[in-house]
Image (cartoon, rainbow, N blue to C red; front, side):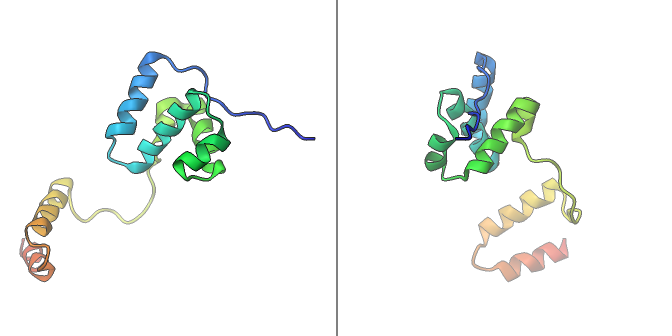
Amino acid sequence: MLMIPKLYVNHLNPDEILTLQQLHHNHLKPAVRRRAQIILLNNKGLSLNQIVPILNQNRQAIASTIKKWKEYGVCGLFDKKRSGRPKILSAVQEIQVIEMVHQSPRSLKAVVNEIEKK
């Protein structure tokens, strides 16, 4: 019978645990929060098969997260920059647009017209 080695993170120090807890509770991106939770659960002794139903993620994604943690540490929890179309709006402009939409969520045509004017 083929034995698959168990995949566990090495013992985390208190600073790593605190960082992961902060990422899990406060990061803006759900993927980073979920990856931090995977590492925390695995550090508590939960196996991949035990984490799968808790997070409703596939085993391969969980294993990948643990492997990236082992290789890159906290940096392995973040997505790499991807290529694609450059953004049209600056970060400040994006915030302004979001605020405009929140102010007039039922009249998006008026918001678009206002944006085009600016």
